Length: 266
Image 1: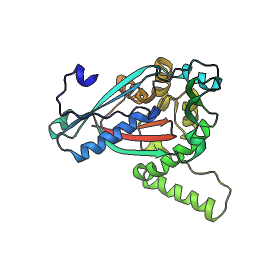
Image 2: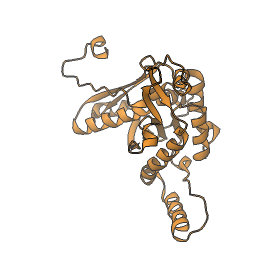
Image 3: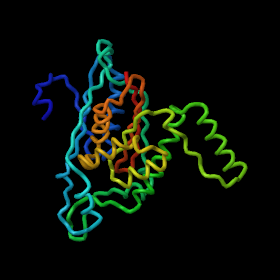
Image 4: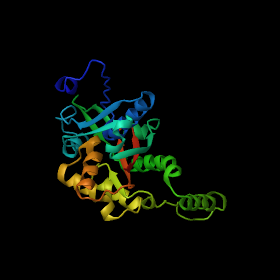
């Protein structure tokens, strides 16, 4: 539809990542990044949208009716390029993409699962295990992201905490690095108020840090994979983005997936 509307040239290459869940926006960024690394002097457009009509549930099972109330239609687009001529007009530079997939675990795989109810009506069931699975997913994701972005001081604190817990057998809480020392802005997927509240507490974020997520959820609802772009637009609209600032986009999705993208404002 987009190719036809804008009459793009026949050599255009398109990829459909439908069914990747609410973290598809970061998955698409990862794919575009890989493609641009392999092809010189190219542009890539990433379009993230939510289509709630495909999985609209018409039955009576409560765990499957829940998705009807959570999701909203939404769409966001971003242009990526490796063309040197666009360097001066570029707004951000992509620093890191970290993807985590817990599909090998049955509880994670079926925490968001498309199936039929007892009457044969198809829909998406949301399990009670989602908060636990999401917590496990972000823990795995941060184990990879942390060493890439954290300053030396935070890394040393993490190592010493591990020594205390694993080698010295001391009863101390696992150390959670202070990611506010690295990132000035946070775009957390609007999976719901509970998700935002949990991440605010787990990552020790301030109310201002999660304001873009709360605003997006309140104003637009859960627009799935496009929510991280709504939040970025909110930060820009408030005039908070400064040159050199780093942005952490964090999204969850069925599978179960947890994906992170790190950008730096130019």
